[in-house]
Length: 250
Ligand SMILES: NC(=O)C1=CN([C@@H]2O[C@H](COP(=O)(O)OP(=O)(O)OC[C@H]3O[C@@H](n4cnc5c(N)ncnc54)[C@H](OP(=O)(O)O)[C@@H]3O)[C@@H](O)[C@H]2O)C=CC1
Ligand SMILES: O=C(O)C1=N[C@H](C(=O)O)C[C@H](O)C1
Image (tube, rainbow, N blue to C red; front, side, top):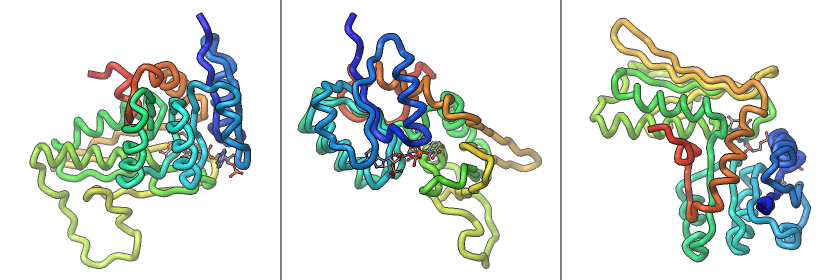
């Protein structure tokens, strides 16, 4: 069987360099291009890439995906910065390329995906819920894509269950003291030397608390999810948001 032809964008970055090694090590995949900032995207078509792994920056990802979708190249995207407006633009491009698949995964690690699932499950049963994400100090965006998605899923689960807003008597606060408000869920971002990617979902009810915590200790934690995404996206046209859709979690 012929190998799937894979390219990595952001190949010199922290996660991109790990992804290059993971693709090279996979028997069923062939790394046909490894591009950094400034490299021309024509290299993707010249190399016959079938799938691009997009691990760049929020300011680069849209142009890269525009090129990929226009050329019928499937994409597995880990880059953050997704807004409703950006998703709508991407859906528009995909409407014009109905055979092409794009997976956007706020987090490729199985533990992080499960954290989101557990948080969603628990959220309606507790009066209070807040998210704390902790990352390395070179991270450019806050809050993290994972924390934003987690908070959105929590908010949707509480809205569906008719859960009351969390109690909070704060009437005066320094800017940022109560975190960012993501759909009504406070999200706090910590940047600390020594950390990689970590998240806690704190839930509280009368007389009890529940903490769901996940730690990515090395970029290798993201590789099984990236490889799964590459193998599945080629047979999944359209936009898939979240790696959970490629896992049998239910
Ligand atoms: N979904 C997930 O599981 C994970 C997602 N991420 C996300 O992935 C992204 C990258 O993270 P990280 O590796 O830590 O960041 P880095 O800054 O280490 O890597 C990004 C790389 O992309 C390069 N780059 C920027 N623009 C382009 C472009 N147009 N074409 C090709 N390469 C480009 C950068 O080059 P230069 O340095 O010259 O700007 C840099 O080498 C972030 O959005 C991060 O949040 C990270 C880990 C896991
Ligand atoms: O920048 C990172 O490092 C990470 N980014 C993603 C995010 O913003 O959620 C995934 C993971 O947290 C690592």
